[in-house]
Image 1 (cartoon, helix red, strand yellow):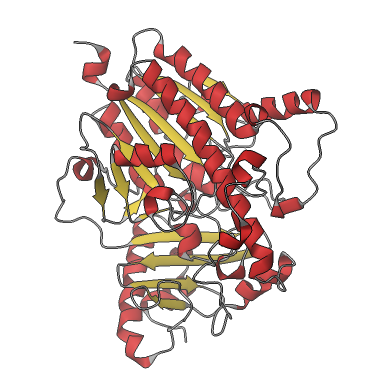
Image 2: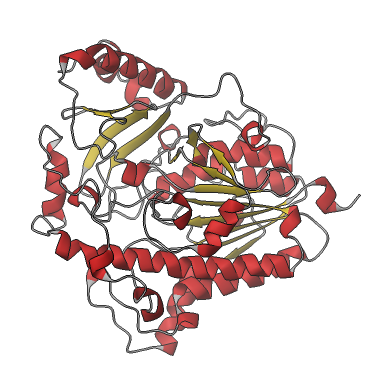
Length: 469
């Protein structure tokens, strides 16, 4: 029996700050992503996938070990100045389990898991620091190149082949070829920086999106009435409080354009997998660490909010021998927490000793079976850092979203009647029993998953005893 007949290869493509609705396959925005759409059509598209924490570093650390960031102290990005813990190499890593089971592992691109220890300390045999190499190459190849529009982005003057998206894709293709040699199953994780702001699409993709054709976000009429003060303050922090849709439309157009450019680079990488003859024997996973406001609720980036724009993420899994084409999953999925036990079960057919994942294996869903006890909600957390500390905990069911803002007014949104989350109905008397139920369920999940915030008796009482207005 060949190695491929026993265990599949695993290709993970993770992008940075991609909204769940900004892929053509979603049918929600006019973004052109033919290659990613084809990947989704060949496997399973998840309609309800959520990040455990909408911040780059903590989300990626959670993905390495399959536990919530609060359990090990990865509360915010460690480059912000405020010192914070990071996931240490002594922690459990599912990639190390794959390595011990005979997989040859490769990692390329954005890391953000530890300030000094790279992926080879966490179970990867090969690490290509593509961003560092690209910056060095770019300075030598284009010494006079300068971008001047800050976080709002601009058209990239570089030829497509010399952009970061495509140089990263080419380096990833080279690493894939290296890993495929030798007869062992392989795992490759490719991490693109895009579409994280600022967006610099080349003209060939920027020209696909006329500014006047960009539809306004459904949440753009936001007034912040009855909402936490920090949300409106974010507009002042970014100096965007006076922007109208005419200002935002070109920014959104560039976001769309860089996603299309990213899709083109991913298409070339998937073509390389085809050329190697290993597409049928490879599990391909596509996802993002979190989303991006990109003008939603008139806001920029992703901080201090739990709106769908940033907590809901795209997730696609293609596995030709297991998943029929064109499948869609409507169950709630905690993407970066559920993938680790899934990958371990796929590659090792075992569970790690003395390690409890905070997610569940997706294998039953991939195989088309519905576990009777599958979750009815998801939980996302946030701890501040960008403009100061601010703790948030969110629980989302099919009908409701409750956000616990421990130092400000809480939020409750009717996700059926108010899908754009414009009306905070936390104070409506008819919702009192709903709020109490969601608070109790949120507490139970946070306590189970080692979130120290609810181990504090005063914080615990806010939730389970309702000691909050």
